Image 1 (cartoon, rainbow, N blue to C red):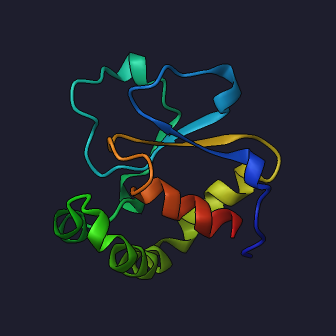
Image 2 (cartoon, helix red, strand yellow):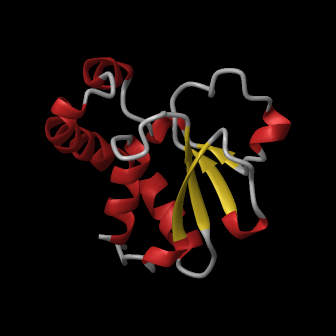
Length: 121
């Protein structure tokens, strides 16, 4: 089942931003734990590190905006191998807010954006 979810139910937030009750379920989508962040401060419900880009893809991308289009294409291919995790998020987000938490400084070029697009697109 690949029914899309309401866009308003899938939010994005940097791991270093203060958690809010409006975040709903908070899911970390990075492979690595955010540097310097304590577990209590993260207030995460789940860590889906397998949903994150592979180490090879992450290192190749290096958050270089010039590689963004190619990164999106390559990462979407990787996401096909994690349909079960995506469906788990979809199931939750159909009726409740879900916040995809990421550590990247770049708020316009990161994996959480692509995951959200796949979920609501």
